[in-house]
Image (tube, rainbow, N blue to C red; front, side, top):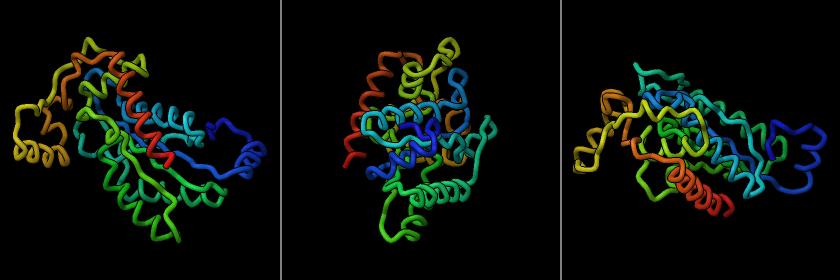
Length: 231
């Protein structure tokens, strides 16, 4: 059920009939190389959340499209502070519980949100008598190594969007032949300055990405996440 499309009497009646789980997708607005739109993280997590809600009969809330993306400067980003993300989610969850929603799932679509989400989890669990909130980052539910505007994200966007310009796609940072120490060093640099670590804002190789691969990856994520969310 998509919350924003409902009418108050119908919604209240539905919530009163049984216990419900609400899903809040959280994305970002930030650069994704020259071939993907700045809405990529929000677009992907919105689609995954929508499919999970249909499959599991959850309540789908509107996506929080802004995230913590300061590390992408001077490339384009519209960012909020970690503290802001924490407070927004806390207010939303308290409001949902006041409206008799039983549990909340936060579905994260951007790596830079992780620290803010950890802060939020501590605050909300301290505020509530028992934990009613679960947080998942969708890339933990696929076998393939994740990337940024590389093969995985580009394939996913080809599967869900027409706003992909493959003729402008360029290979970015490739870590395949690097050792653990080198990768760790690059990760630390990327957390402070993603452009400095990747040069062109792309982590991975989008050149071989296809819609077919995207559909397969999307199906894998939804399947794996749905099983976890239902338990």
